Length: 372
Image (tube, rainbow, N blue to C red; front, side, top):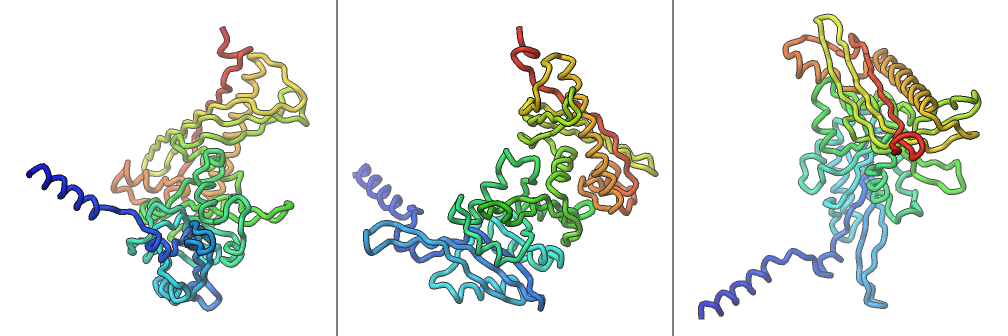
């Protein structure tokens, strides 16, 4: 008897604990895959929501889906989101939203008034990716990529790509919230635009927008982003390219592909100046050689030296530019506050000097290195 009661109890509990949607449930929800936030000329907040609507076809009794785009305007983001639901037959659900995109105009005007609702409402994901679109919200949502039916899903995959790790920052909304109030309140957000120069239009990551005190103050171009990531990264770079001059021909080049990169940072403050010491180790392989190459240990050492000089020159040039603008992209202020508490420094990068120790190693070939 006891055994029968336990089996009956188990069956009852199993029916109560089911967490799956049935067809009726999922057909009555519209899921947002991307939220685009813009600002119009009257300072109203304009939002676009790219959505996925699942429905069961009455013709062949199969599950199908369609892409929907909604637009709404409001004085606040909360007001605009509520307005958005007045256009939809069913409630728009943001629990599957993959990216939050701010337009360049919204970023330059300031993100402070746009993010509070996103962090307060439990339906919005803190681990969603964020980005700045170099154009209007309407331009972005009207673009339907051939690579994917949904822009939001495409961007989510692009911003996680190891192949693009040197030209993007793997930045999510929760990281933005964590860093916006420390140091000099500087954040790095991926910038993107629609490239129409080829036979097909494609969304392309194009550098990094620098956000300080919630306002976009500068933009790194794609090449500057590479040098910034090399200076800043703690081992996240898994791909990328360094182009150096050929060892034998002035008008030829050699492409080195990054396989692994690790940067460690030490900082010394003497009360007047900050010495920022970066030790950069990069493993590369030879990816492309124009007009052949004399494969010898001496040639490989020359290529390593050329790569080290180029990285040193480019990173120091970028550091000098950021220092002149007073934009602390490398979070020097925060590191000083952690290591030298009580030091009263208004802007650490302004009194900082960069010292870099760069080591590039070309991984061995069967003929030159690593052979028996």
